[in-house]
Image 1 (cartoon, one colour):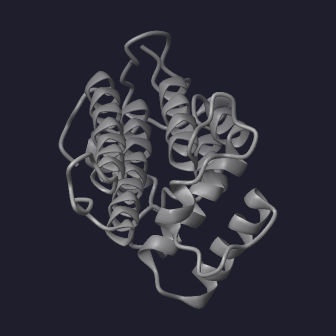
Image 2 (cartoon, rainbow, N blue to C red; image 1 turned 180 degrees about the vertical axis):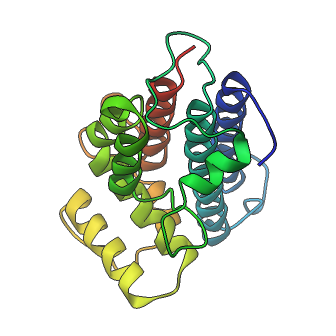
Length: 215
């Protein structure tokens, strides 16, 4: 991991999120039939595939943001606004901090599971600040996002069963042959103003990141 400041990490994540958001918007617009055209630029199937790519890229950026901000706080960096968390450990350098957060017997630390990241934060920072409270307050939404990420990344029946359960819970019914991209493009029931599931998850992740590294 290259040495970057918290301000740069925050800015980079928000830019990645906006890039992913724009990719999804472009895919939607390209799938529309414009006046004078014989057919849309891309099919709905390709639109949904691009939407999945946009979501997957955003979630990877979220994972990287969690890891980088965690390590930078652990070596004593200050956020753009506010105070640094009180540390329980004082690694001598960034590489040592990376090594210290890796669970025993594992090759690397995992950043997709909000429960694990919250528990890790409580081992290294007083009250787990600034991670534990933010992640636990948004745990259900972030776990839903993880389910969607896994359904995109893995072809396993388990990943897709969890995705089907999520769709049924959110919509009240399971459409025939649902895809992650198709689901993300749907409007959240009861949302005012109307918002897609993609934008719902992006907004929640963005809000959490801004709380973890305030500016």
